[in-house]
Picture 1 (cartoon, rainbow, N blue to C red):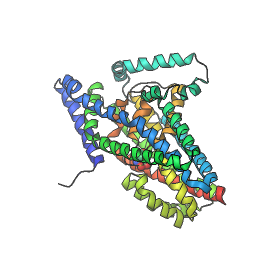
Picture 2: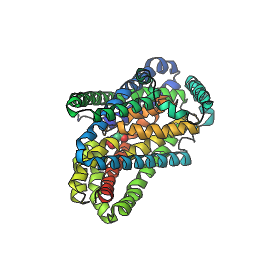
Picture 3: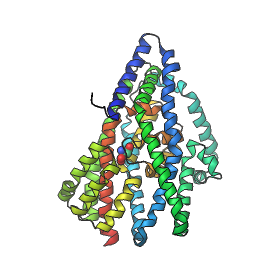
Picture 4: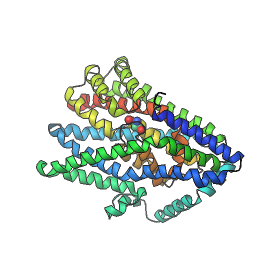
Length: 419
Ligand code: ASP
C-alpha cells in the first residue's frame, strides 16, 4: 500500500474521531471518550505548546542575527523588514475584518454553546479575571505587559509569548552589535538549536492524525453531536478561501502594479508556476528556489534584492498564514461561544503579526503558533481540533499567498528602495 501523506492521515483521523464520538453518544460511551481517548488529544496539544517558546525564541534570534549577513545592504534590511511588517499587519486586519463580518462560527446552536461554556468554564473564568485585572490599569497597560521583568518567568507561561518575543528581538539586536568573532559561535549554536526544534515540530506534526482523532471524538461528545459545527466549518473554509483569493487575485497584483510598476499580465504569468509549486508542497521554504528564479528572471528583480529579500521573507513574512490565523482564532472563539473584547482582538493582532515571524515555512508550520495565540487570549487550545481536519487545502492556499507576498515585496523593494 502506498504511504499515505500526513495531511490525508489527519483528515482520516478527523473522520475517525467524529465517528468515534457519534458512536459514544449513541451507545452511552461518553465516559470512555472522556477518560480514555480525549487525554491523547490533550497530549498532542501539550506537545504543540511545549515547543512554542523555544521555536519562537530560536527562530527569532536566528532571524535577527541573520540580518548581519547583509552588510552593505543594511538600508535594504531595514526597509524590507518595515515593508514586511506593514504587509503582515494589513493581512491580519483583513483577516480580522472578514472574520468579524462573516462570523463563520456563529451558526452553531446557541443552546449547545451554553453547554460548551460550562465545559470550558474554568478557562473562561480565568480569562475574565485577567480582563478585570487589566481593566483598572490604564490604556498603556498592554505596553508594560510586553516587557518582561523576568525572562524565566515569561518563558514559563505560554500566555506571555509577547514577552519572549521582545526578549528574543532585544537579544538578537544586541548580538548584532558585538564583534563578529565573538558572535559567531552563538550564531551557529542558535542555527543548530533551531534545526533541532524544527525536527521536533516535524515529529509532533506526524502525531497530528492521532491527536486530531482524539480531540475530535472529545469535541463531538462535548457538542452532543451538533451538526451545526460542521456546517459552520464549511463557512469558515470558504471565508479563508475568499480572503486568500482576494490577496492572490487583487491585492498583490495591484500592489505590484502600483508600487513596482509590474504589468498585471506579467505578474500573473511569472507567479502562477510559483503559486502552483507552493500550493502542491504547502511549504514556502521548499518553494524558495522556484520563487527566486521567477522573481529574478521573470519579474526582472535584481539578484542582490532577490537574494536578500526572499530568504528573509520565507522566515519573516507570512501574509497568508497571518490572515488565516486571525480568521481561525475568531472562528474557534465563536464556535466555543467565547466573546472577544477589544483588548483580546488587539492581542490577537499583535501576537499574530509578531509570531508569524516564528512560523516555519513547512506544511502545518502554523499549528504551534496558532495553539499559542489561542492560549494567549484565553481560548482553550483544544479548539484547534475543530479546524485541523480540513486544514490541508487551506494550508496549500495560504502558502501560495505567503510566497506571492514575498515576491511582491521583492519587486517593491527593488523599485522604490534600490533604484
Ligand atoms: N505552510 C505554510 C508555509 O510554508 C506555513 C503555515 O501556514 O502552516 O508557508
